[in-house]
Image 1 (tube, rainbow, N blue to C red):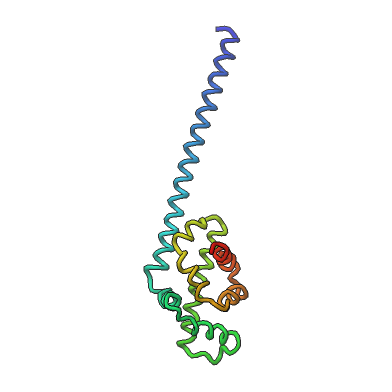
Image 2: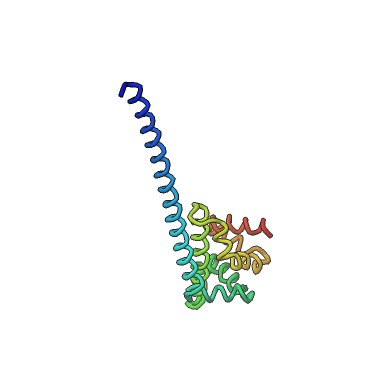
Length: 164
């Protein structure tokens, strides 16, 4: 073999190596995307179970389902003006509502960071996000959410108000 043959052989090997590297990178990317999708689905399953299959948020969901939120409105106002006058049961109800809002703030945070897509959030929690806005005729919840540090949830609810 002369030097031109070796150069041609080297070019063939370089091309084959480049092709093999490209195929390996493509397989690695597909594997990463698949793992990422599985992880996202695990998150969704855990969030679904936490919200729908446990009793933690049930009492607030029922209040929102049945338009029984007037008591929550007054508790929110009293917690800002007269927190010391609140009875244990009222504090408990307020804590349950705060936990509910914190749950959705977490969902909105995950969506804002790209860990969940808006479509994921919408398909899992559309009803309850829209219900919060429907039962909030005079915007008391929205004002509370906006001013009490639930910025991500406020932005998420704004997206829903643009959809309707």
